[in-house]
Image (cartoon, rainbow, N blue to C red; front, side, top):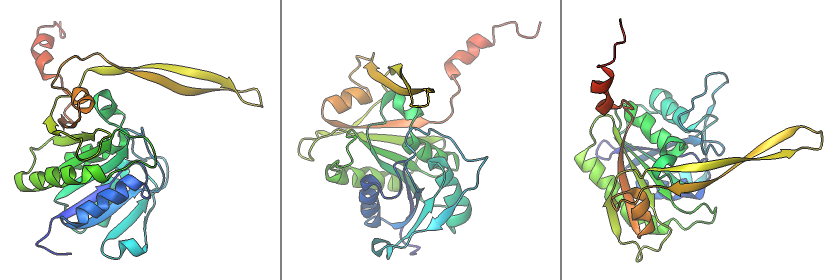
Length: 260
């Protein structure tokens, strides 16, 4: 690996063979030296889960397309992948971690469930600038090519400008051609939620089981949100912090008589 090129860790939650990560790897190879550590199977919706009660495996992957970089398949979650990459695989701290490209949006409330973003957040907790990329297309045949130009732009700016400690970027792409995308819009996370239901069924042995279903409801009418950007043809870029403290409420809590 060259000392003149940035070292880029690539991961995801859809699995190491997913089309999204394969496209992201090719983009990153044009920018720096790439090492891939990604799940060996889909880990969507895992959030920031880590493996503590099972063995964790991380095996090198040998493919024709990996001749110019290293890849490792990990049995754990996206957060596990970043942990084992930084602690065991990489010889030095990476200059950047990119996660994705996810099949499906991770805008608004979805960021807290997202394995894609949790990998980026995990990197951020270790002081590594990190970006999560997602495409608003859940199909396995999704076209990731329209994201290329924008990913290069954002990645290079992060490498040039750096990132504040405790912050990562959440980037979502609309399902449009490159010409149809109007540009990149810096946004806040929309206030939205899922109205969830469980579809109850019974298996042939008579045991009940459930399928989680639901409808996404956007309650936010603001034109500065990630949901508005996606609906109006923009790439949304949201800075995300992993300090979950509600700082605005600290003063109010300190008025409570808690030690009387």
